[in-house]
Structures are given as C-alpha cells and as structure tokens.
Length: 617
Image (cartoon, rainbow, N blue to C red; front, side, top):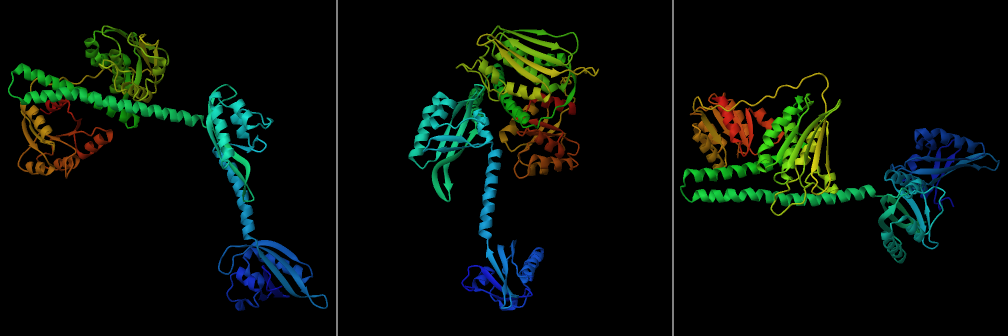
C-alpha cells in the first residue's frame, strides 16, 4: 500500500526527520536519489514561510492527533506545485507515537482550474463592461430568451423586471419591420446548423430613435460538452454604423475630388501646351507673342492657385500653420479682400454692396489669413451667382462678437449640402461647362482658419435658386487697443540703379534657362549652373550679388549648398533665395537655418522676385 499509493508518502521519526519516501512520492517531488535526504528535518524542505505550519502539524502528530494544511512548495528541480498535506502518528504497542506518517497530494491542477474558472468569470465580466456588451441566453428547445446583465436592459430599454420572451416576440417587439425577416432567417440557420448565431439590424429605442444592434451567440459548454443552449452578446453599434457611413461618404467625395482635380489641372495645361507649340513654329509679330505669353502666364497663375489651395489645406489641417496675430480692424481686412476679389466680381458683372459700421470691429488675428477667409467667401459668392447678380458684404458688432456675412442671390443650395458645405472636398453639383463648382477646398479652409481664430462659421440658404449667406463670427477685442493702420508693401522701384550679378543653380535645365532669360531681360548679368559642385567651382573665380538656388539638387541639396556659400568670401554677403517646390513650414524653417534670406515656391511669383531684387539694388 505504501509503495502503490499515488500520493507522496513519507515516514518520519518522532523528531520529524526523514526516514523513507515511496516511489511515487520521489517522482512527484522530482527526487532522483533519496539517500542524501535521510535524517534531514522534513521542515527544512519547505519554504521559510511554511516552516511554522509544518512544525505545528508535527507537534499534533507527536501528541497522538493529526494535522492538515495546504501549501505551496517547489519540487527538488524547481517545478512549482501546490500540496494538500495530512500528518498523522504511527503508534507503537504501548499506544505512543513511534513514527510519523506525512502524506502529500499534488493539487496544482485542481487549484489552477479553480483559479482559471474564477479568473475567466472575472475576465468575462470585465470584458463585457469594457466593451459595453449586454449578455443573453437562448434555449432553442423552449424558445426562451433571458437577459443576463444590466447592459442588456439598457440597450433594449427594458426594466429589470421584464419577463423572458421567445425569438419571434423579440423580433416583433424590438426590431425594425424591414429587418424581421432577416432575423428569422438567422434563427433558422442557427437551429439547422451548429447553433452559432449572428445578426446585425435596426431597432427603435424607447424614444423612437433608430439604432443599430449586433447579436452574437454560440453554444454553451457544459463539462466540456456543447449543449443546445446559446449564450451571447448584444451590442449597440449605432456609432460604428454612423462612422462607416461617414467613411463611405468621405471616400466617395475624395474620388469625386480627385476626378475634379485632374479635370481642373488638364484645363490650363491645354492652352499652355498649344501656346508652346505655336511659339516653336517660328517668328511672330510682337502683339501675337505678347498675347501668347499672357495666355501662358494666366494659365500658370490658375494652376499655381490650385496647388496653393491644396498646400494650404494640408498645412492647416495638419496643424502646422502658426498665426501671426495682432489687433486688426475688420474693415481694413474687408478692403484688402475686396481688392483681391474685385477682378472676378467685376468680370461677372456683379453688384457688390458693402455695409460697414462706423466703429472699429477690432479682432485679434492674422491679417493675411483673415483676408484669405473673406476673399474665399467673396470668390465663392461670385462663382455661384449668375452674371449680373448681387453680393452683400456686411459687418455687425456687438459687445462680444464681430460678425461678417456675405450674402448672394445666386444658385443657393439644398439643406443637405448646406449642412456639409464646410466639409473637406464637399462640392455642389457641377455643370458640364464648369461655370459653377470647384475643388471643395475654399470653404473647408475658411472653417479651419476661422476656428483657429476662436470663431465659428455658418451657412444658410432658402434652397435652390434662393441664394446663400455665409457668416463668420469672431471674438471682439475689447481691451482698449486700437487696430494698427494697414501696412502696405513698398511699391516696386520703377528703375534699377545698377545691374546685379546673379547665380542660378537648378538641375532642371528648362526652368533654370527660363528664369535666367527673364532676369537677363530685366538687365541683370546671369550665370547658370546645374549642380552644387559646378556652383562651388564657379564662385572660386566670380562674385555674385544674388544666388537663386533650387533645394532638390542631386548629390548636395540646396540647403547644404547655401551653408557652403555663406562661408565663402565671394558669396558671404550675397542674397540667398531658395527657389523650390517644397513649401511646407518645416521646409521654410530648414532653409532659414541653412542661411537663406528668402524662400520662394515654384512657380516663382516674378513680381515678388523683382521686388526682392529691387531692394538689393
């Protein structure tokens, strides 16, 4: 019996020292050789925190009683195990304790199973709470559904005292009529198959609002065997469904926008290409050359405007635009915006009526960005108002806010579009002649910039053909500071005092040649190089007043070249201008750190470049 016992059986002397251990015990304790342990105190094999418990059990056995405890103790090879231990006396003929019997049973598996079951229940409760899930049970045999936690009652809008229902009653009481048939099909498929159940559909909550729910269930295990009873979850997925709808709508609008962008970019490319082919045919009189040049310039300006809008949206939505704020009178902002939008308004024969208050509507803002906001609203009104229409611009002031509104009697819009007109890539319906429409960027940019100023925007329209009104509300500055007088850019110098020596470095041969030809026609001496290495070789034998450098040069970029030029005696005091396609704020910061004085984005604004050169002169 001693050797065949599945437990670890040990015989101790009356003092509690080890005498023998059965074969199964040595296996359980992972002891290869028991002989070194003979005579050792049994208590010494236990962790220090258990010694007192072991000694108490031994004392009970010596007095003729027994001891029982459960404790953790690793095996001889370090395997962690839990043991259930019984200590009892072995009595002699005189009834006294001669030896002690200690029986240890490995209960690690049972203990772990109990802990796992407890942890599983705890995890299930935590998971359902964290996931905001309700729980239910359905017995297909009795066709009875019960609700198993408070969240289920909350989702369904039921009181905890609500009685169980069957599947058909659940569908009739809670589901949208259009989804009842699909629910029945899901129930039938579950019963006919492996009892797994899944359904997604609509329901009306207790307030009558339409909501989406998702049901999922699987057979409940019973002692490792699946039963016919299903346990499952119910989730309110309304927010997810709305988000999916928004994503689909955004994806659709993105595709429309990309198609529109391609169309808008192809339009100016056609006359530019035709003009270039015409110029290649031969010599023409001055008037025809001037007209061809005006066409190219006008179409390039249009393309530049499109690209700048795209970059502006990217910078603003990316949070990299920093406002240069100062106290400003909104009346001055309106004057600058009207000056910019005037050609479009006059070109379409619109009547612009401006209503300004006698008092200053002072706000704290970035002058350039506020002009952009008002200009975009005026341009939008001009585009969507038929020729000869009327546009009203009005400023209203109260104690806390300054409100600017732009109203037109144009094509108007339906309520659905008015609700999302400030969303990125939102566009009205386009006519085939492209007289109305756009890239859907301008108003999105307006909204972002206004919110950066702490303001809000709104749109109202009476419907198709009833015109539209766009309003911008900004916090009024009330601390007594007056808005500064508008600072206008210095007028371009009419004449040049001297010729400048200018170095152009650009690996784009055509771009470098055209820029050099333009500046040479203005009376400057031009030198063109196409790599940083050639430019560095050139400055060893020549001095330059101005260096116009592309940033994206091969081998050594323009920023590294600028740093080298700044340290060379022939170009140390030259004006360094970055001519680049990189226009992000981070690109400007890098060029400034490299030593550039100016950062101009391609295609270069030739008027601004001429102003810069005039200042150098």
